[in-house]
Image 1 (tube, rainbow, N blue to C red):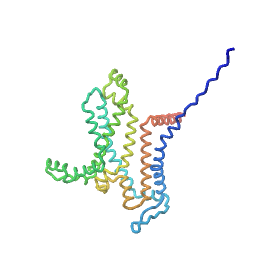
Image 2 (tube, helix red, strand yellow):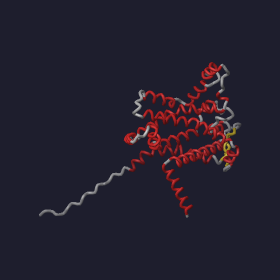
Image 3 (cartoon, one colour):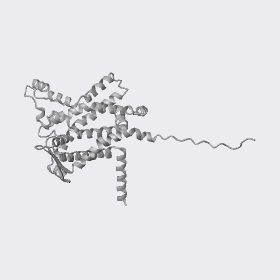
Image 4 (cartoon, one colour):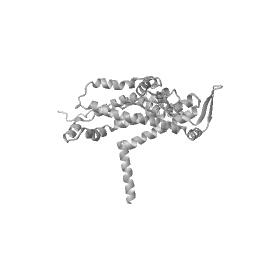
Length: 325
């Protein structure tokens, strides 16, 4: 007699790989907590204390003062001057950096130009990024000194006196901006090239068939597509610019000459910690720098990302509806 019963299908145990994701990111999380998050929280904590080292007895004095460190910091007003110096030198270096990097990236990724020796040019552009900022600053300090080769050329052509680059505000700031530009425009070019190489070639070909010019393709198609990378470059460059220290410090021997016009926020922080031993005030400066970085990054996110644009449009629509009512 045939068995009419049908065997029930066996259930296979599903394999979950979610735990392996947590396993692989665990080392990064542990390192971040120990070396980043904990020191950050300690900095916030120490900013509410008057903590300094007595240079006579080398004893550490610690006393809770609440928000007094921030009151002293803003009442002096010097932090606003140093913030202005930092932003001015960053803008002077970033604007030519992003313009030239976009231009080179578009040229190097444009197959119609058929440029030769691209590997050589890419290597040469990226090489300044491999040089230590200290060595780069020393080289510029020798090149633009009063007895350096640049001034020798100036004297030979003009027959006048050497020009003291470090004695004038905008020439000193210009040298700092020039060095930052030379060190980082190669890295920015590589990032933008990678973004442009990800643009779908069929979109560009369709635009060419429709009669678009190269400039129209660049402004209307390429730039909107690579906007996420542009925002990334802008934010990372802004954060790095606010942390500017080694180039102006070495170039001016830590003095921020002339008249503190090249003193940055981190140079001011270094002065508080290394010279006055005022760790509490240094913690307050660190917190202020952190807040400035966060606020400026949020401003960039709000004005340049798709999510920010959508939020602005929604807020405008809500205001229009309220006004219509």
